[in-house]
Length: 310
Image (tube, rainbow, N blue to C red; front, side, top):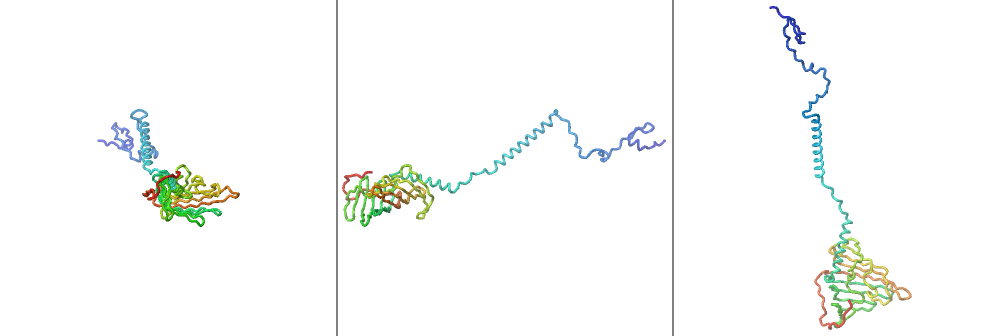
């Protein structure tokens, strides 16, 4: 038997050998041989679409939409989860002004309820004028329009003092050591209640919080003369009075209840060749505000026969 010559080239190339024998199967290429001519980084070809030409585009659009929804939902959750911005805190001045206005309104309400206005009043008034004037002091219980207590008026060197009662528009007076008599004019100058005229819409200003006798109070002010005809108020016989300047200060609690007041007024008495300046300074101190006060006609007083004008 003749040995068949071996041809490496034929075996490697897969070509037929001489004599008609079938070629050996081709040798597998190594990794290096298979990818020697391939450029680095070349992307693999995209697979053919399965559902027409727009399949991949639809998938991309759907994916982008889902991504947008997820981002939007996450952003909304982030915004909603953040603490919402609060309004700026109220300034101290604004809060104080509001509390002052509330105190003024409560004070007006208290004044308007004449049936419920009760207090004990210490009155100290000084009227100063050239060669004229006087000092009025009083300690009185007040129940709406009625009052009872003691007064003392000093006119120069003359001192007038006594007990007084005004109830149901009937006035009674008693001098020291004397009996009760009816008196149409109890107080020489004015009603002891300084708030009877504050039932309209006079401008009341809040000057801020202060401390009186250890308690916080609102300092209120009325810059108008609210006491009616100054001649009737002062019973001044030195000529017609004209108010030139006035300040009525009132100190009230947070509930609008007054604890003190002060009147300072400058007036001119006309009717003479020279005008006479008149100054009024009155201090009111209130206690037992809203307390149970009952005023009745004095025992042993004469039967009412005259009424005092309201």
